[in-house]
Length: 388
Image (cartoon, rainbow, N blue to C red; front, side, top):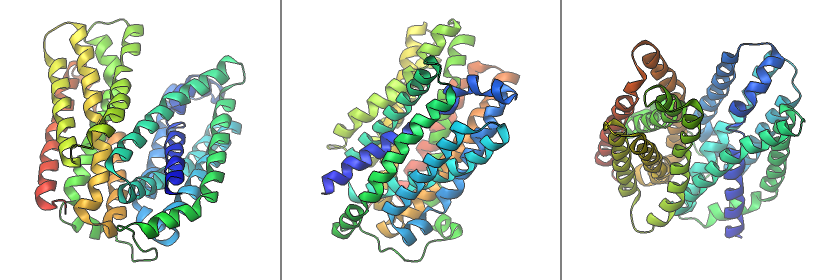
């Protein structure tokens, strides 16, 4: 039965990734219909991000009250409703309104699922589950592209993903007894109904600020690389726009393949060792970008940065109960998710200003700055809150 629940969680992670890349894939077809500037995609994205931050910070309270299974099921249902709302909306204002439950649902399920897996499953499953998320994020644009190619329109693409989310919601509600059984049989189970920690209490825990900064820096580095790699290759390395766009996908290949491989390596290495390994590989990738060599080395560097990112996010999450205790892990993972979303929102636009007003050639140095801070904070975390 527990293996059946794990299979459902794997499906949930694939499904979670499906909507994440839809807006970018569909927006070129959406904004002319709404008669808004192309830049308005940023407004929708920010509303979604704000919702994820709010719901992540409330995840401890919600999970203690309802349990991880119910929070996951309700959150996926909210996401499904939002996607179906996207599919039928006829105005930009309505799109922004539907973005609110989209973000609230995404943040809650992200924090609840990650904490549940951290408590009840081994580190390799956390890596493989995040690999499944990458698979879903990669498939989403193809579903949208298929809808557009068939002439069904971008609304059909959102509708197809919404139907998938509805099916997952049904599976999740049916599986609720399995979640309870797994929690009762786990030595790290947390009693529902306990007192949730306030944000100030969480931040005061030794090591909390360090892990929050780690997550901020990680997502700042990851999202900056995702958003600006193509422009860096085109504007600084001299590749054609088409070639740069194609090769920018090497980062996704690196991170997805890396998480598949990391699941096997975690059998031998601890979470902290995996994180250090990832940090070292990122450093090698940045060094490759900085070396005055041909484009082949730059592409290798971009792949290495993705490969190095692969174990960091899942291993920090999986180590949270070890650092802070099972009774506080949901609260800590909630603020970690919120810190991650803040980093994702702020860092890429900030580098955009740097690229616009100074030069895009500074991207490797910008990534290096986040890497240095992240490395320092991880070592401080291990000293302040050693795994027990």
